[in-house]
Image (cartoon, rainbow, N blue to C red; front, side, top):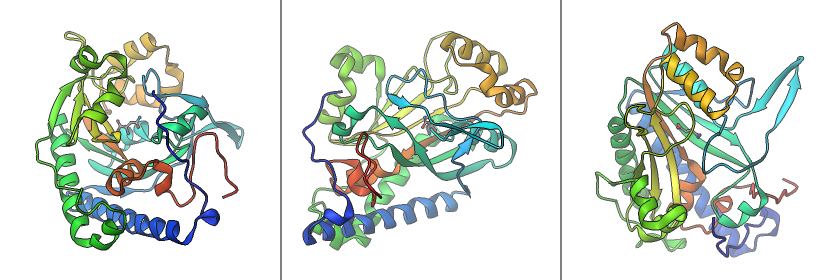
Amino acid sequence: MKAKLVKLPKPLEELSGEELERKRAIARVMTLTLEYLTSSLIREGYEWLLPVILSRVTDPLWPDPGASIEKRLEVEIYGVRVRATLSMIIHKMVACSLAYPKLFVLSPNIRVERRDRAWTGLHAYEFTQLDFEARGASSRDIMGLVEKLLRGLVEHLKKSAREELSILGRYGVLRVPDAPFRVYDREDLEAKYGGKWEVELARDIREPVWVVNIPRQFYDYEDFETGRWDNYDLYLPGLGEVLSGARREWEYEKLVKKMERDGVRKENYALLLRLAREGRLKPTAGAGIGVERLVAWVVGAEHVCEVQPFPRIPGVVYEL
Ligand code: ASN
């Protein structure tokens, strides 16, 4: 990824009076954003689950062209090796199949990104996903829900955070995007822009757009006949990817085949595979919104870590 020349966010104790005013305005936008999105999902019938941080199983984040993990965190507790959550995707698939047909979770994700990612303005070594999943949903269902949430959010913030958005110089700039959002196929973007399509797309678009058909982890649905992936990422103008999601694989044979193909250790996903074999894993679809990225876009922050009270900049570990 091309390095943007961004200033790295400072810790709270180093902010000037004016910078603190900006920080507080951002916190208000964050508060109203979380309130709006969680209450909207609750209205749509979603249950709010609490997150897990340490678990025997987490997202492999592999093979994912976007991932650049410098270190995978594992510790032993009670004689068992557990991993820090990279994403709660496996928990979502199991919980949605067995217990909660519609669920969401504000999930802390700990991803020790390579330190050169400090300069992308997009990465943090800890961030929060608003991660949700629905049983029996199609990709279009989830994309429609996200479009509704994003449009509603911008409208809500323009009413409820007028003063803060003005302080941040964003009131006049933000407008409610038209829906449905345009959909681009990743293959077409590669043909147009080459390998760096993500950066160039974010620079070129003026409205949020979808990118579909992205080859990645075993849990996203892949049509073995056509080679197409039934997944979708949302890109925001000037920012980049803010959400990734998919319809999921649920069939045992396909999951096994993909894990073997990708070199993902099946024994790490024994429960998921057992549920699939027993027919207890259900077709679901969902997505995760990067909360800091979303708010960074709303407030026009140069760096996602600026919207965190305690910045988690790759390679920069402050005292708090
Ligand atoms: N949350 C994403 C999803 O729902 C997965 C991820 O973060 N890797 O597809």
